[in-house]
Image 1 (cartoon, one colour):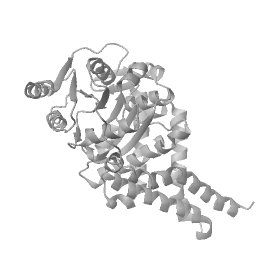
Image 2: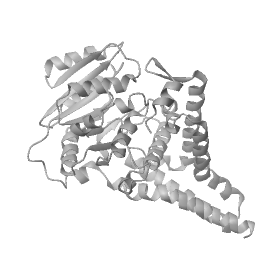
Image 3: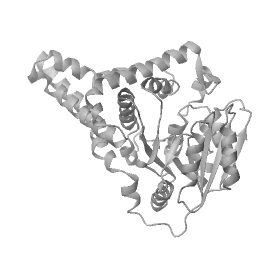
Image 4: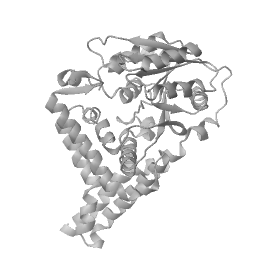
Length: 388
């Protein structure tokens, strides 16, 4: 085989790799919206009780709005537990004032973090023990819920007899660079979790979303709650893996306008927001990060170089790869609340996220651990506790 033929077929092999991840995301994910799927399901004869559990630390700027939005829900059997995890601001005070007006809200105050736990997983575990709901929804202190979001979600989860159900929220952004990075990370998350392949039991076809992880209480307790993932900083995703490896039923939908979040407050905030999670996604392993980076560069960056240097007849596979990735990027940006204006920025978006991964690794290795919410977790301890 000549050098030209090798380059030609390498281009189409790159396209095939990109298509494996892109085509399901492009064709399936935008259609899987909460309102579209839930409204096809019958309402349950009796609505199950639901406990919404939020672990919050120093969330005074948003917690009041989040709680008020939840309390305006039309769900008929609802309790909310705010686990105030060692906050130093007015988070607990704001929540307590709201709880005085509405008995559906309870505030759990946590002053001490025991050894061997992340602050968030410990708070969620304690709150889950106090919850009374047949279903538990784990969420965050900055998530905005539409009034019918809980009802539609339970309508779908009950009809499908799910043990675990995720909603992928719409992401609010304020600047174009922020929208580029958030949209690209959303696409990368879809590629990495491959939720459409769960029924095939592919090893990475599991998912979990910190904004909306709904679980059936009896299954959650049978699997040990958050205890098996108590020191895994990817707790939301690993909760999904816990259910996946134990054969529990699960599904996901796109929230649309039902659930929204401002993930970070700037483009640099997105980079910093990946500081604790990105290297953890590679299990704190430099060889795994290097392997991920090489594949990432081969799919997202090498086609640009090939298209620039090779004649058209040899670069057609690489050009097809770029076209497919841009189409997927644009479509998923719209799906998750972004704008078509990000479409030309696939390359800088991919470079920004790759930088965030390596920055996360360098910082974690330099300080020999992760600092999260003013608590330091040693790297050796985190590596030993990764849920595999």
